Image (tube, rainbow, N blue to C red; front, side, top):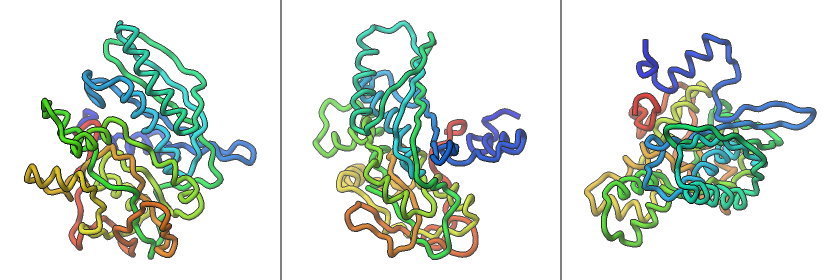
Length: 307
């Protein structure tokens, strides 16, 4: 059997059962050091798989840091340190400069210190980000409770629309299109949610592979039924305009679009914070599975070995 037959998450489940990897399942590992909870995570960007060679290198650097710290934030951690392994072809030094300009700018924005790493020669450009954070309480994807509201931050589907616009290679982009492209190239991890997730969330993860896929993991780990409503999915004005212009269903983008790096979390509806851009999209119930408007929802998002 080849790994493509299992898929990314099937492979993870196989490794867990084959080698008794009990703690694998969340995007970060939580290690207790003295009285502190240390969160550890890693993320990789590979040219041709996660970004195109035509992308601005500063955007690649920004996006990689954002993806890494987003995992720490989603589990209730404050991002602190970053190490980078650079897989590097024999490129112009200017390209490396631009990459690290984006990395350092993102580190400054998130309050993260770049403290080390490694460099290895490679046939294709790749960057592996290893992040370290500190948490008062670890919030995994398996803690949802019956009666919890299901919430998301921000708006969904913008990054996918931005990617499609980039692939169109238009000579001129309108302002709303440029904003969608920017959300794909330079997403912003929700550092403003750290305290809320840490204090109130019962279950939490970030949306990196698409809501329809990521919510499946949370429902399965929690062992409960997640019921969501399509009309409650938060959509940006830019995505609505894009869908209108191209005859697309904007809700499809919200369900299957990855790399928004918004947060998916559950807690009692009474904990809704009016000072954060959160939207309740459903409710956690007795049972199992994920349902959209009463019908079973299939995973439509990104899988490394099937997409």
